[in-house]
Length: 212
Image: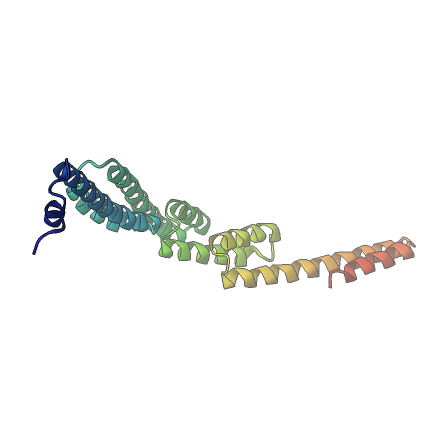
């Protein structure tokens, strides 16, 4: 069977410059095939990078660069993957240190977990450990330092917006703040009543009732 190029030569044999035209078209087709092949590598590598799977990205890059040596786009991806792998490795190292420290000093251990998470927020184990430590710390101080507890709860929700434990603590904190507000309103009302300021005392009670 004749190839498309042979058919074209047979049909247009008298056409001036047919060989040059065929060569130009064939060269353009070859360039497109090469570009498409590289684009597939780039897409796969980008997907691995976006997933923070730097080991897989580097494996892909090894094969891609053997096919397209010193390609600028691929070498740029390689630098990103190498830096990501280094950052991920440092996160794991800090996580291990934080875990060992947490048993002796929970506050310092928590800071270590934050540091590890800051380096690799996609690491599920680091994220889960950080949330667990935040839950424990917030639960421990919710009765004595509601402001600090609220900050920790907000941090939890920033890490994982739908976290059930954080939402539960948020409701507990809201109930406690409501109770404190009511108790304060009652206390102020009694003081005003003792001073003979009955109207002010009643208004204070009304203010307390709005918290219910």
